[in-house]
Length: 153
Image (tube, rainbow, N blue to C red; front, side, top):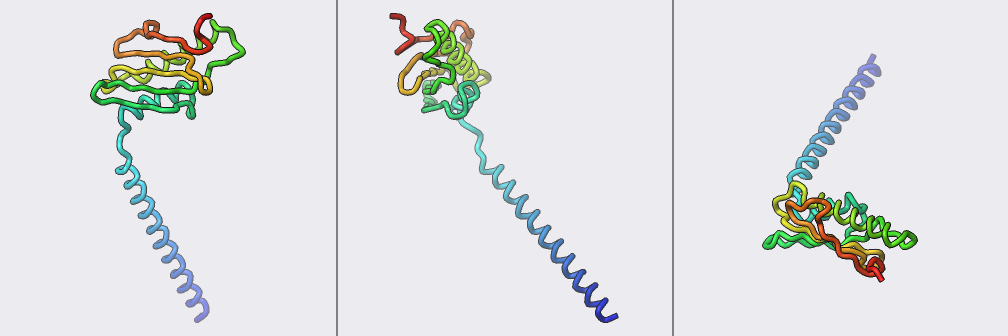
């Protein structure tokens, strides 16, 4: 009988310890999650523009991104995901126009902080196209300037 009481006592102690440990872990987890939420500042206009470009050109595509709050101008240098030296001049021009305009359009969408955006598209170290867009520009009216191998001979 004494052994049974000791076993029950030990079991009760083990259960109580387990519950206390679980409670401490839950409290620590909730505190950590709350701190992470409070530390996370909303992304500024420059970060949002770079994120928009990444969604079009790929997660590793953005080389450099700048934002000037005074002029509300964002500039993004991007490694093109779609340029292919094996394709024709016409195809590559169409791809660069589409990639650049989509990135510019998405970067400007719903953002009053960014008035104008310039997207510089690169293949390796060579600039191949630059697209500039501003609030209110129609997609097909965003100017594109070709460079390097996409300049007509």
